[in-house]
Amino acid sequence: MRKWTKKKKRRIYFLTGIFTSVVLLFVLAGMLRNAYLEFTAPSPAYDNEKQHFISKLVPRAQQIQKEHNILTSVTLAQAILESNWGKSELAIKANNLFGVKGSAGVPLINMTTKEFQDGKWIEIKANFRKYTSFDESLDDHANLFLNGTSWAKDKYRAVIDARDYKTAAKAIMDAGYATDPTYASKLTTLIDDYDLTSYDEVGAKVIRNQLAGYKAKVKKRRRRNGLWYALWTPWSN
Image (cartoon, rainbow, N blue to C red; front, side, top):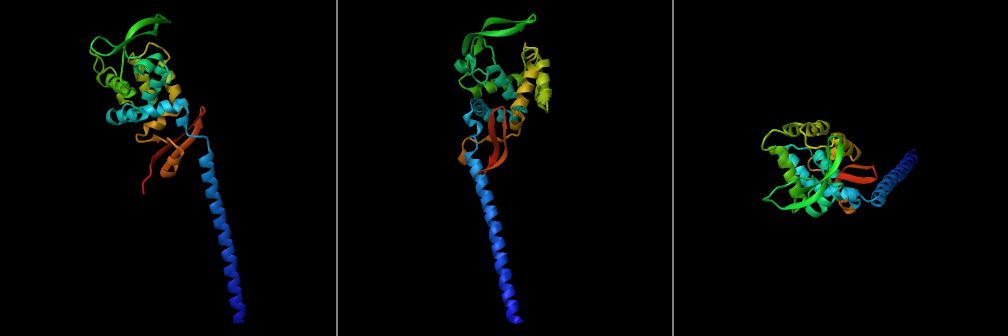
């Protein structure tokens, strides 16, 4: 009876060992599959021209939000809309993302622009600010919202006080920032289409290479409008 019990125990141990091994193999196979899919998935959007443009602006735009409460999503949408993803002649030649005009005493460039007047679009020649970098353009744009104009210091206060992008876009339009009557709706459409509110979480970064994915905690990864991107927080030991 005792020998039979020992044999039974050994059989149970043997079967338990086999079961455990099978479970571990399935777990390992799942981990390897996920690693393979991650490594062979379409490259993050840093390869994409549009995402590359966003990536260049995010660090400074988020710093502005941190310091002055101007939503990153709104800053990005304005830069995208007004510079055509950084491809406008003004952005290329003068790093001017927002069509900021200038006067004597600062670096200038004279160019043709379109404005909406009397119910129609017209072309005019004007002097525009010339910046040394996109960051300088972002800073000057933020200063406009912060300081207003010489005749209305609080002209854009509602933009700074806004806690969501739709309120901010409306406040920009109500303040008379743009002549385009559809400016606010264009901003909100861009923000929705490209999920720009993801960047309102200050500190979020775009993974710049696949190896970074293995040293980061991935927070989001999705495809929208042809863009693959991942938002992450820094990895630590």
